[in-house]
Each structure stands twice: as C-alpha cells, then as structure tokens.
Length: 305
Image (tube, rainbow, N blue to C red):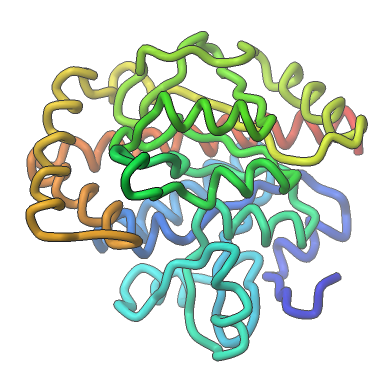
C-alpha cells in the first residue's frame, strides 16, 4: 500500500476483509456548501452508505498524508478551515510535501481511491468544459482523470454551470462511457434534463456492476461516469435554473473571477438567486448519488469479490 495513505479503523477493516467501499470527496465540503450544512451533509451521506451495507471513505489531504476516511474532528476542519486548498492531480506532490490541508476534487478523489483500491466513488456533479471554453481553455482535470483512472463515478451529471454538450464530446473522445442510471437523458445537476443523451442506460445496480467488471477485466483503462438524475421532488426546472446560471456567469465576468474561484462563486451566487433552493437540491442529489453508489459497490462485491 502507498506509504502516503492513512486509514480510519473502519476503512482499514473494510479493505482487509474485502468489504464494499464508497469513496467521497472533500471539495464539496470545503468549497461546495456553506457551514454547517456541509458537515451535516457529510455525516448524513456516510450513514446512508452504511445503511446500504457498504463503508464510506471520505478522502482529503492533511499533515502530509492522504487520508482515506476522516474522523469527526477532521470533517469539522475541512468544513470550517478557510485555508483548505483544492487538490487535483497537479497539486498532490506540493500539498503532501508541504503538509498543507487539501480537499480533493473529483479528479483528486479518483486518484486517491485508486491508490487505496476503491473502485466506486459518489459525488455531486463532475467538472467539465466551461462555457466559453473555446476562448478560455478552461477544462476540468476531472475529464482527463476519467480517461485514465479505474474508478466509477456516480454523479448527477455535469455541473449545469458548464457547457454540457462539449463536456460530453470530450468524454467521448477520451473513451469514457457515460451510463444513465434509470435514465436515457444526461442530467444537468440541478435538473433531470439537459437535452443530451447518454451512451448506455442501465436500471439495476447488478447490471452496472457487471459492466464495470467487464470493462476493467478487458484491460480498458479509465473510469465510468454513472449519471444519476436528482429525484423529481427535488429537481429545479431546467429553463429557470439556466436563466439563473446565465445571470451568475455575467456577474462573475464583470468581477473578473477566473480559474479555481469560478465554480465556488457561481454555486454561491446561484444559491442566493434561488433563495437557497439550489442548496437544498444539491444536498438531495448528493444523498441520492451515494445511495446508488453504495448499491453498485455492494453488487460489485457480491458478484466479483
């Protein structure tokens, strides 16, 4: 096992006994939601995973180590410490060598999960090609990580602040399968629809597990994107949220906000413009994703461990 990895007792026991595990990111805690909703959400999603018969592994960098699983005090620090940095592939060596605290993005969590031998990861939404990406070249490292790292990512699609069409084109070019879980349309985070389709539809965790096993048994490197729409009761209307996003993007441009700061700014602005409804939707979709991810992890364990 990689010497930079440390484990909670719960995760260590799960790995030693080949139990199903679901990886969770920390960027959603540190940069995706306000306190105290962020830490409350983090604890609730871990329990949802346990209730499904799997083990949660929330991942973050701290004190020169990649933590696979966090205790309650560590979760609180990720939820409240303003110095927490985002960690993607390029950032690992710097943060580990300097001992800084870092919250893993989708890409960062995939890397750490693969190092730890975890095959299933649940998040909110992946990053992708930003709107105006043909000008800014702002393309998330999540997409290149999906092309090379053998972890299945359960999400509510790509964040709706992105250019979803170009994001899907990029994934196709990189050979990343996009599976719609109980849907034939690619969801757009806050909404169940986007106007774009998926590559394959699967309606049962066992079918998804068999697909994952087959892909990796063939030696086909890279992840799988499992798109799981937000529950209907919690979804926001597509046209309404699109208008809100466009307004938030214009404000970000006017304030010259770029790079890593764009997504946190837009998510906070959308929360304000929707009077908190977007945050409620965000929490609901994360809970739904971890439930599906746990079912897939359990199915993968039962069939192939």
